[in-house]
Image (cartoon, rainbow, N blue to C red; front, side):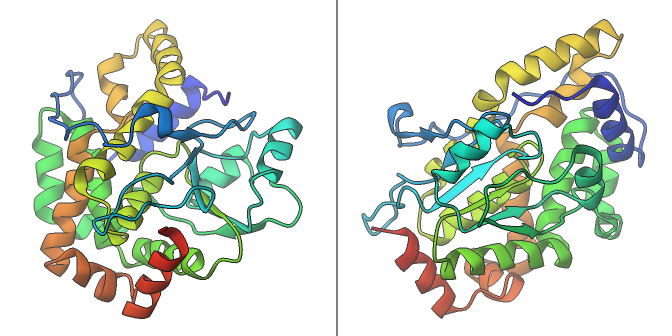
Amino acid sequence: MTRRTPRLVSAALAGTVALAPLTLQAPAASAAPATAARTASTVRDVTVDGAVNVRDIGGYTARDGRHVRYGAVYRSASLSKVTATGVAQLQRLGLSASVDFRSQLEVGMSGADKLPAGVTPVAANINAFSPTLLTMVPELLKAILAQDKPGEFMALSYRGFVHDPDSRKQFSAALKRIASAKGPVLYHCTEGKDRTGVMTAVLLTALGVDKTQVYGDYLRSNQELADQNAAELAQLEKLGIDPALVEPFLTVRASYLDSAFDQIKKDFGTFDAFLTKGLGIDAATRAALRKQLLR
């Protein structure tokens, strides 16, 4: 299991919330959609020594009754600490490519992916708090003035994934790679929950998977990361840092993903327009995705 040090978390928080002062206030609860229709027994966790939150996204049901194919797309947290055993486990997946959404700073701090020979590493740097967010004045002011500032800043970052052209470019390239892939594709960020979560939500929605299942997959990261987060929050509390301040950064909330979908509506009107105008996914590419991933 990968371990994050309090020093690294504190540094990340400092960079994340430098735009506004934070109050040490517990986050408000977020109402979440019902659990995904796919049962726990059909969720395919993948064991990779040295990595967490590694999952096959197969098994969900699309509107036309077909199912997302197993063994075609994987999502995960960082692969920079994968052991030799973990590399062998990745080898068995037969991956054609690993798309890394981490920023250059994150890669520099924690290291490059440890991948099997023959897997193409793809740098798809996405800055979770890009300068584009500064142009979103109403949402920025809301985050600054909110009681739950950490949660609002996380929601703001999700809006940025949609609003920022550079972020959309990376998501678009990943979707096109999956549509034309000759073998399974894995994508990840640092914890496999935010950028990876949005990417998965967009992909599953494009395949016709309903909202309940999309949110169920997204929220599963809280279960996948629970032990790691509990250990880290306990460490931070010993250092005098209020866990309520940090928890919103370590977990996912339905309201975060709500913000991404709301920004899609604000910027593009509909999800289909977001795919075509925002991501450059034409009808042929969308058909290729469905052919590749649905059975």
